[in-house]
Length: 146
Image (cartoon, rainbow, N blue to C red; front, top):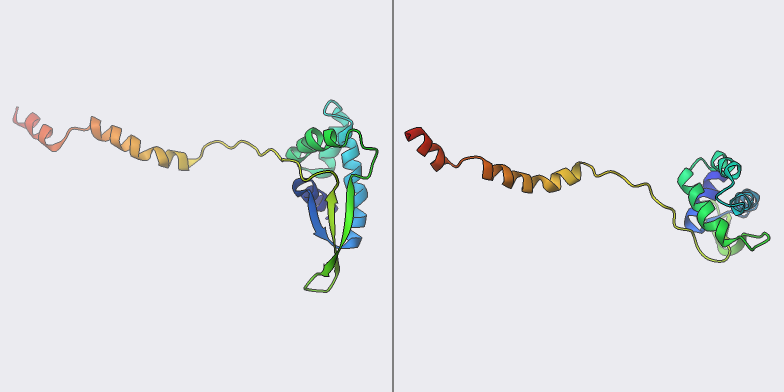
C-alpha cells in the first residue's frame, strides 16, 4: 500500500489520505528522495529504488527531477496538511500529503509504436493508389475487343 501511495505522490505531487497512512508513508518517500539525491550515476541507489518502487519510468523521473530539485535540501521533502473535511463513507479525517517546493515532476511516458489505427488512417490513400492501378471497366472492354 505504501509503495502505491508514494508512487502516486511522486506522480501527482500531492495525494489526499488519512493521517495515519501519511505518517507511515512519509519515511518511505523521504528515503527514496534521499536515494535520488545521490545522483543518476549511482547505479546501486537506482537499483535499490527500482526494487522498492517497481516502476523504472517513475524511478527515472525520481532521479532526474526530484533528486536535482532537492539536491541542496537537507531533509523534509514532504509535508502533511490537515484538511477540515472528513471522508464521506466512514467519517475519517483527511490530510493532504504533498511534496514541498513545487508540484509533481513530469513522468516520461514510454514511446509506443504506431498501431493499427495508423494503418487504418492510411487506408484511403492506399485505396486510391490501388484504384489508379486497376483498369476501369471501359479499359477492360477495350482490351477484350482487341
